[in-house]
Length: 69
Image (cartoon, rainbow, N blue to C red):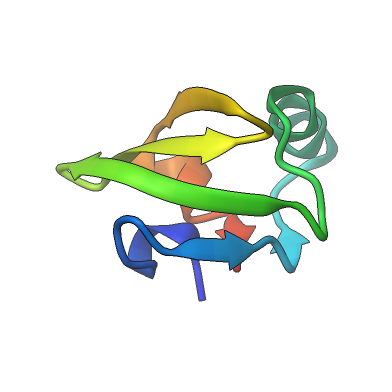
């Protein structure tokens, strides 16, 4: 399921990152790697703030839909 459907506060494991190569590289640079964990801290209008690799990152709804957990 896409990250946008995950529950707030629940730790999830990243299964797949979709999108074009530029998008994948961008997300990997932020710490979103397959096998890594991600936790949603808050969600506003589909946009999410997540905890990934001990950092908080804001991700748009479009980007969050490309991250499968």
